[in-house]
Length: 172
Image (cartoon, rainbow, N blue to C red; front, side, top):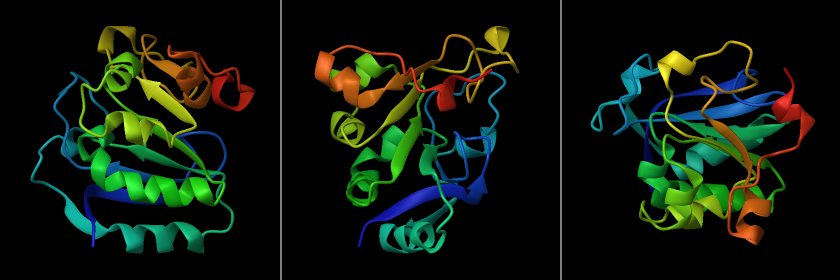
């Protein structure tokens, strides 16, 4: 049984994407961005392990969700473990978003093992490291202005990053 190392979960987040979302904060991050909102997620050995099956059950118990968000830490460090969960959620028609300090192009080009496979299951990706001097509280669902909100499926079709035009993700 696959087990994901997490820092925590939020069953009803309203800050990690539009609507009510189930947010999974993965444990472990190589980026260590100054001013990070979740520095407790940085240590690779921190947090706790939870089975994918248990996470999926918790998600399905909440019938009011608009989507699921993979946050962190760095979700793509555990891409192989997140992949089966993402596939199940996608089959169920649940919108999946992820935050990452990597760039879309790095994930597309295989910089992270299984990163491209996990990417293929996502609807939305917020990419790029948090940059404290570019921090803005006016951005929808992003911390700094260098970060992009990407329509993953259109981007995969075109082979390059395509910014999301979904007003739910871009309202300011």
